Length: 160
Image 1 (cartoon, rainbow, N blue to C red):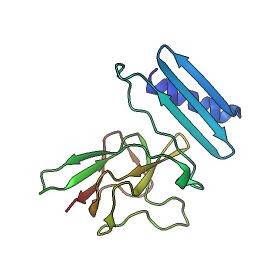
Image 2 (cartoon, rainbow, N blue to C red):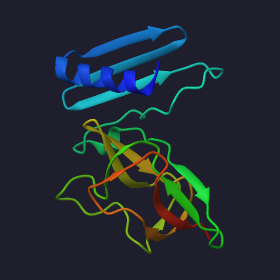
Image 3 (spheres, helix red, strand yellow):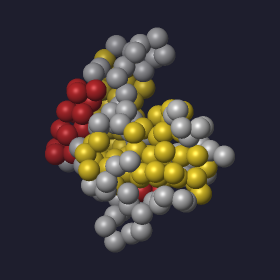
């Protein structure tokens, strides 16, 4: 099942008002559950099949603590031992969980592994992006409410 098909399925479920949908295509299984304002997506594929990355289970900004994070991509940069956190999905980058809340992280903040750095909205689903490393935020590379592409650098972190 391709990412585009999964995205279309999510749109359909969100518009239809159904509570749960299960789809199986060969060895790929997709389950989408809705509960009030929360839409969750669970994708299971066998290890042998290569599938384009899909958003992880998510929640709306009103309940960001309930969502599981999308796995950010961390890459070492040429500048010393800095790590670059990249977007795992296409969407809109937000630095805070909702307009009336403070930013998740600022330049100079000490962060720990698993700490939420931002959210990326994709098709009305908010995906929390967590840090894969502990360290200090050196640079935030994207402006709030800006569109981001897959694999686009978001943060530079000094792991020391």
